[in-house]
Length: 254
Image (cartoon, rainbow, N blue to C red; front, side, top):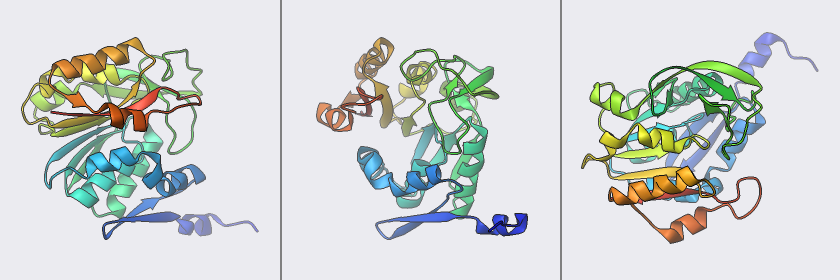
């Protein structure tokens, strides 16, 4: 049975998830975005455990926010303020819709831009066109293994560094930073060195490809700055097989 445009618009599919008595609502216009909601407890439990340690009114910088699963979770369950950065246009639109659905406009500010080691106009090389998709790359057409990426589309985007945004007063000093940018995490760290040196910075969660030399060097550099990680937590997060074998979320605390 065919739907009229008006009937289609009224469908407006959504899905809810609850935690500790807090109900969060997410727009799910596709099977992939529905999966993100349904899998949030199982996909990265260590990320939810990390967020559980946040204090009300602390500041989280979410770099690579996608449609806002962890942005919304942190703001809704912990009462933190979140500055969310997502350069992909479709994900950014849904991120903002999810902010509105959860009445978090006073706590969450989203920006359609990428964070890197330099500021300016750039290109987002998109792995696919799915809403809620990932594995895109800013600047260089490389995948999370640093191998050539056959992009399906090249979207224009803006990049900036964490240090310039904080020093310029465009966002407050973060207490926590989450970085998930599919292989380019060391570039984000390179653009955030002054910020990371400040005492207000308490922790980071970084998706790390342990197969890559620049990622291993990033871990050592953060350790040298006083950010420590728990090898047991990393081992629990590490993908043991498949395309992402060797990738793990590292939680660093100071």
